[in-house]
Length: 228
Image (cartoon, rainbow, N blue to C red):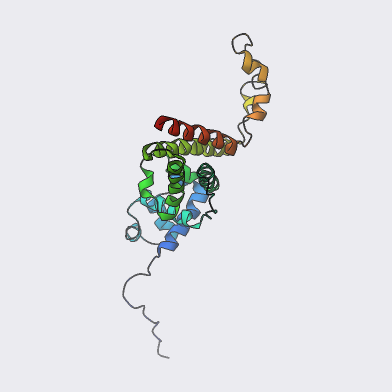
């Protein structure tokens, strides 16, 4: 009986890899291993293509991370911002905070000055809301940038402290100082000694919005006073 030849694969280009497929695979690797361990080579192996194939879509790891952040930013729901400038600043900043709190690794990527230039229109819309709110309140454009920067540092710091604390299992200070501040020298540090274990209860409380409001109030008032 004559042997039937198996069908031969047609020569040509390998299957294409879409940007959506790349970003989905990158998110999976970050969820499993953290963004620091993500590499183009590992991502290529995850998808099943050569690393050179990915370089048709992304320049390098940093470019990939910002593609992910901008894609995520497009999915963030922007609330109807208040007309009152001060409340608009607070609402926009709180939206930024909540989005990054759900994706704390992105906050770590965005800890270098100059990241603003890498953001897409949707994330920049919230930055615009903060700056515009400060200007509408009476601040100069220069001071409005200072307002945003100060809010940004406060926001990212809060997110990263909470994220790192959760990663380390809650940061139980009692393991390092007995009953937290219960055994320190009350003569040298009287207020901390008086707080004792209460510090461990008070410090982790979610007071972001309260702190944000106080910060914004002070920053905007400072900007107006400088102009008067």
